[in-house]
Image (cartoon, rainbow, N blue to C red; front, side, top):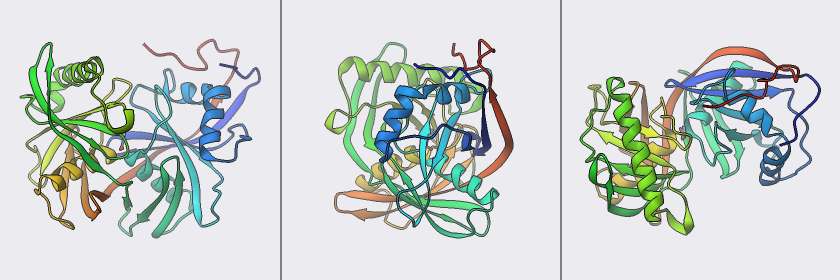
Length: 318
Ligand code: PYC
């Protein structure tokens, strides 16, 4: 990866959505020559991947950090174009990140309550900033692809789960037998990792070769106002601190396919940290359009200094 030799300063705003961080770059990034968002992501990956590693890896970031690079939109009706990334690469859709970016744009005074359009790699996403600071967005078409897929894991034995798409591919498992709480993170992580490895080893994936890189363990809620609690194991080995926007969409798709939630009814999804998203859906053919609602708060406004004299300036992982 080519690395810059001059000192660079990036202006970033940090936020969290139900505990899950979003670090939004609002200035200082090198200009990209690509026109489409796909070309721009390819360019970031090939020539400027140090932005991702410097912001999400230690010492500035940590394994759960998700970054968002704001770019000029193509469509003049859009408020921004956004590229999401994490500790291991560039993301498709990111629900908590969409809410975090919306809160950041509101903090900057760039948007007021109402509907707004964001350009993303998976298409245009329309979000609503509500008067009470909450943000809702219509996610990409979501669907259950396979039901009750059996696997055999080394430590947790035989498990079953549905495979569903909610902007990322998920394996949703209910029969893991684990308590989903912050007291049980080690077991939850181990279970998530083993399911991921078992699916990969067995060649079990999503439609059209989609890689199932998110594992969602679901259980009875800890909160009285929630319908279920989840632990979402993410591609880089970390867990989502929020209820996961794409994971909640995948859950809605499974509920809809099983006839367990009617269109327009609200599903309250609790995260392992105790935060909450609300989800509803409308059918669209044999798929659904999920609508996810959550809240994000700005935590810092920072100038990130990337100075090549620092041997760890581009970040490190363990
Ligand atoms: O909210 O969709 C989401 C998400 C995916 C990974 C982390 N958060």
